[in-house]
Length: 325
Image 1 (cartoon, rainbow, N blue to C red):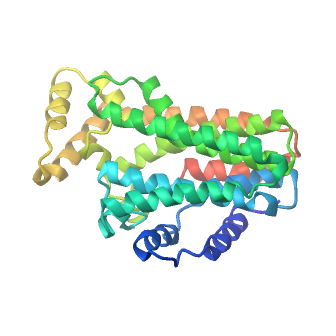
Image 2: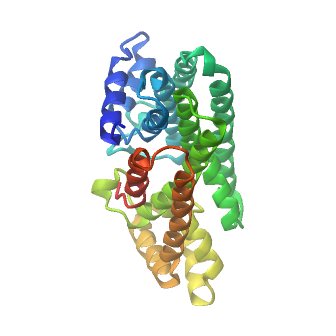
């Protein structure tokens, strides 16, 4: 079994081989730019790690892994426009470095290119891989729409939120693992267990992202801290704060949710973070993360492969749980 670091290095080498130095430059240069920023490469790594559980030959799964990484980065280009995010991985987002139209069009080409790479999946597995990839792509759009809708809804409960992040984030991790497992020769039961492992790790991963946006270190997180607070994004933290707050705390929270003055941004982040601390929502979020992490490990334990082969996925799951970026 190859380690996560070994696999991400293989992915990086293959990504660097892709030629984005094409015309028109204004279309392709942003793609090369965003892919050069790095990132964790979790999705392609999961594809290859799942394949590696059942096969020593990773090459048949490589194009599928690259497709998922290109597709994931395409979604980030469009998400950053919707969220008006200025920074991604510590660098200016594409719509800030260029403009909105560039980010939209370059993102569109990335989506097309992801399907070109999926089409290179070994013929034996192409139909099921294409089907689950297309289903996942649609689900991610559904999750993004729910996220947009939640900004306008006065009431969003925790279950609504968890379903949104399952669609927006977790399904792509599940897709990566399931497709990699298939290409490695896994049976349907093992492929489904890995899909469920990906869903549960994805849910824990996004809850961790919610926490880091409030409690993370901007230098390591790669994005401005408090962005979710400033745009009143209904995260797991805010949803529970709204449910738990009463009296003075509720009034204070509602007052700051109505404030969008950029001059008061620092004060808004500081005040709402303080309210989160008073209401104990950080520990509520951490407990839910642990719940999904435990479910993911239970999925992994049921796999019909030797325990030592599962260790790299266990290590990765733990790393994602306790990450600071």
